[in-house]
Length: 74
Image (cartoon, rainbow, N blue to C red):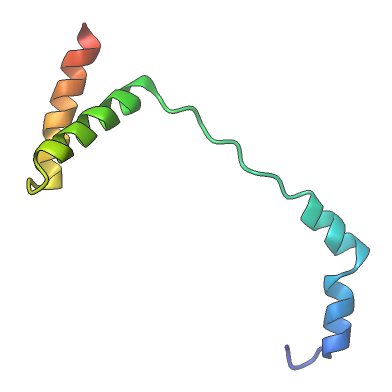
């Protein structure tokens, strides 16, 4: 434990009513909705990685970006 606090005092504080109430109030953060571009880009990138596993990530990203732009123009 800490130097200045006994283990019994620390236990009392940790399990006190205000601390328990604060722990109950912790809620999950709401995630943002994934945009259409990002969804399409992810699919294209996964497909390219499956076909070309040894190609560098930057090259695959460029190809996926080009494919995504073309797919979204339609």
